[in-house]
Amino acid sequence: MSHRKFEHPRHGSLGFLPRKRSSPATAERVLKSFPRDDPKKPCHLTAFLGYKAGMTHIVVRSRSLAPIRKMKGLKQKKAHLMEIQVNGGTIADKVDYGYKFFEEVPVDAVFQKDEMIDIIGVTKGKGYEGVVTRWGVTRLPRKTHRGLRKVACIGAWHPARVSYTVARAGQNGYHHRTEMNKKVYKIGKAGQESHDASTEFDRTEKDITPMGGFPHYGIIKGDYLMIKGCCVGPKKRVVTLRQSLLKQTSRLALEEIKLKFIDTSSKFGHGRFQTTDEKQRFFGKLKA
Image 1 (cartoon, one colour):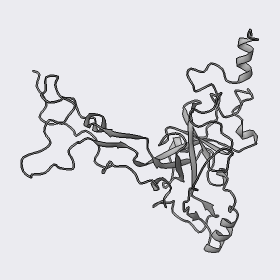
Image 2 (cartoon, rainbow, N blue to C red; image 1 turned 60 degrees about the horizontal axis):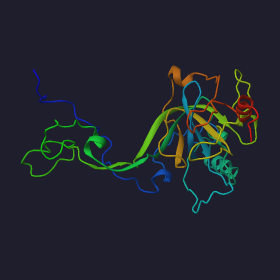
Image 3 (tube, rainbow, N blue to C red; image 1 turned 180 degrees about the vertical axis):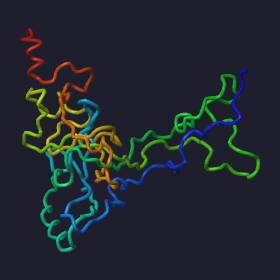
Image 4 (tube, helix red, strand yellow; image 1 turned 30 degrees about the horizontal axis):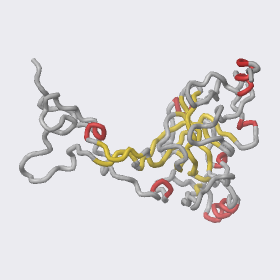
């Protein structure tokens, strides 16, 4: 018998309301939560700012994050400012520790390989979206009067108002979000061997930047982090990297990762070659 259900689970989570645009300074504002401070441990920073660069693949998906530093041709009118908590030691020890990083904070001073971290940032903006795209509600039957990508009933006559729990059209994307438990696969330093994408199983000499650069970002010139999984926001958006608030005890978190292969083929289309020399050897000397 074909008929519509009388009840079903609701579409969309109410835990992320209101779904409105994030404030411009939200991504780099003072964080509300940091890992618990332990005076018995040595002093260390608990967070870091970086730019989202792009995606490549190794054994699984990963993303590279480049830190903020002065680069030629980068027209940054206003510096990104943020307060980062220093954990460990006494107050005097924290002050002395902070003096060391007045010029630049290296990424390896905050994070380590195989560590689990959190990513805090603003997602990609989608603009004004309809209720089907925004909340994932079911389309109405084809012969529905006055449109079918709608919610058929938005509430009872009384109370004489629309409840906040009813799915409605509006802003989608550009929301402040926190993604937890991202594993650090690799940490690279500018001008060192760690900036090379070769591994024990793949001895090809190649840089971490893919051929042609990361789309909409370019070339990785400074320190970088390679993490597993997705990262909020578009390319070149500032994201905050924070040490995990929880004590990691799972097998996945404690596993030591050994990279076998890092893909550096072109991300513009379907890349076939890992290096420029490999491409030249394949095509040979082209005719003028």
